Image 1 (tube, rainbow, N blue to C red):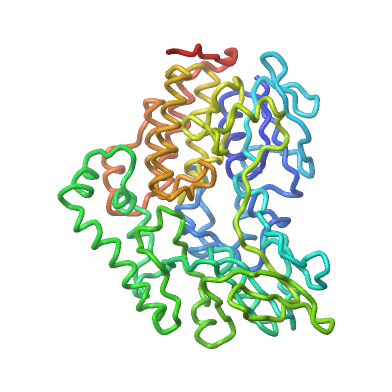
Image 2 (image 1 turned 180 degrees about the vertical axis):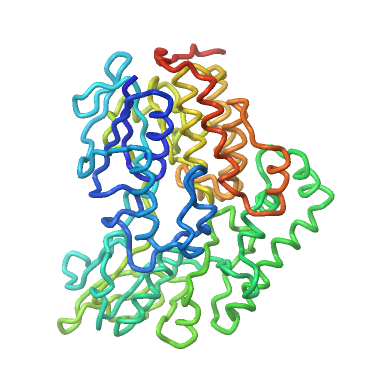
Length: 490
């Protein structure tokens, strides 16, 4: 069977590798000049590193190099994915942007080339959301997205504003502050930051990247020990989470810096927490970085030939360069309108069963639309699910039942995240719940003892290395089943 994969980031590469091992002919498209998705040299910005440590950001059967630091930088991560593609024989069509992917009978045409199945893996961080500022058209300074800012030398001697307060904003701010004339960060809302080393000693993965850490956040369906944590043990659960916040306050000196965020550490579920960037709070302390909290840029203008920015609090700042780390839009512009109409609910959320299978679009799959703390592992297990479904080996509910399940999940995430779930594509902090559900459909799991150890020890993707060969060994080698259409029930 011929399968097209759009995107050569981690999700696209994992999909290609698994489907090739399942015996399919796979063609991968990517508009970038190299593999890696967000880690491509065409996308990465100075200072970018992984948020999760290297072991947790690895694919199950391909560990990151031992000499990599605990938090690899962008170039190292891209090299890792390039090595993965080389090892497994994935030859992507790079510098190739897909213009149109459309259904044609039981097949899909990708820019006129026919495939039996299509996997969309273009990523949920592919299109930066850059604000339009009043006065920008006459502004003599430069405005760009963080993913368009590749060389820190562009900031040398310049007055730089960084818009945002998430990980990307803080990552790019630190190297900029070392060369810029001034570095100001414009934060509409402060977010909690988790230290890489809590109290300077304990890697944050020991607390938050475990099954216990995930269980501290209430999921739509409680099971086992979660029932205790969100029932009789709720007080203990809250104290465990809030203790991390207390340590962050003291470790970074947030009260002294007037940078105490609103809310609580539990707001991680709202995407309102990120890993602290090395050197960021030190820069604020020594004055090389200035944070303007609870405000936005209201207009850009020139004064006596010098580019300036005015903030909502009436502060006026020099602004030679404005770097926007303001999030991303999720889109599939290459799909025709009649397909896109079936992909979204009335609010524009993606309707994807298991974050993978759209409703009413036979032969189409998504991977990477499950952004998590363990994105490579989630993508890899989703790829195995896709391989099994192509072979007709997933016992799917009816389409009405799948639609109901997706809507219930979205309704839960609306409440849990205060609608901050990137149109249904972000599953943080419920990474392992997603893995468990996907593998449950495949009647696959890992050793109960290893799984139990992950309650108190960091999740180890390598523990899942046996899942792919085990599931694929049960599938027919030449499985060419027609795309399944489910009758509506009701």
